[in-house]
Length: 213
Length: 153
Image 1 (cartoon, rainbow over the protein chains, first blue to last red):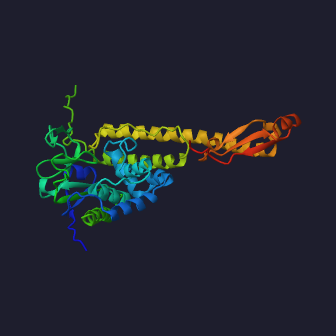
Image 2 (cartoon, each protein chain N blue to C red):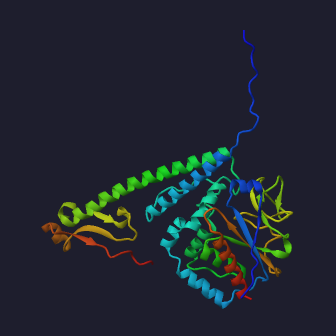
Image 3 (cartoon, each protein chain N blue to C red):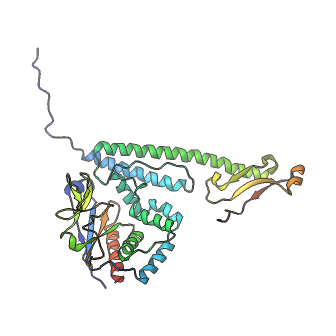
């Protein structure tokens, strides 16, 4: 059985004041991107069979996808334009006729989101600081070397810099590349999402990654 | 003449927190209503659901939260009215189907589809003469119920 050290990320006081139940959990995993194993492909196929048009339509009434929809609204994102991660994978499943296997990392994240509804991102652990958390972007701050951030945008960050826009782009110098050997998986918790679902999502992604080795 | 007193200035800035909390709660409730309406309208088409994005993810100002709440409330209201109008027409169409089945000769050539009664699929009820021209001449009308969607080409 694999060992996973789950940690709670810090949340900037201003952000915590606005969204008291907002949280970020993360865990380190020793894994690198690989070709997807036969077992994982099989699992994606089985998962595809559970998604039907009716289920996807009613998904927004399910507790966890709904909680993320609400959070999207509250932070100024239209969830019908930029879909929540759970709805995003479900719609992609309907469009493509199944969950398309890409690589071990993307597949692990897809499985975690599809099974739990909790969005999980993967970062290169060797390129990020010791502790990560959530805060508002600073004036003139950039994501990676080039991409400018708007002030007060919500970002995933380490002690020194922004690593990813929440529900969005990951800094090119923090994301997983073919050279990555150690990863950091992070799951976002919002109001209405039990902590155990976030943990489950991280476990699921980590196990799928390890299984792929 | 009494001396004019200087205006009293507040010693502390007003706390936005309770107002913000309430607005966030209202946004959550309205989003729930919108999600319920969305599921109720399926498989009907032609409803508007978009409430414009505020360039997030970010912490919205109080006025932005108010605007968002108002837009969501307006969207919910419009969707509810549109659904109510639509279901009224669908009810009329259901009644029409019953009347077509009871008295087909009084509803010659009338055709009602699943879409007209808010159901998924391509099934339709069509009042047609039995045996073509002979049926037309003899006033032998009947309701033909289609078997479903045509095969994809």
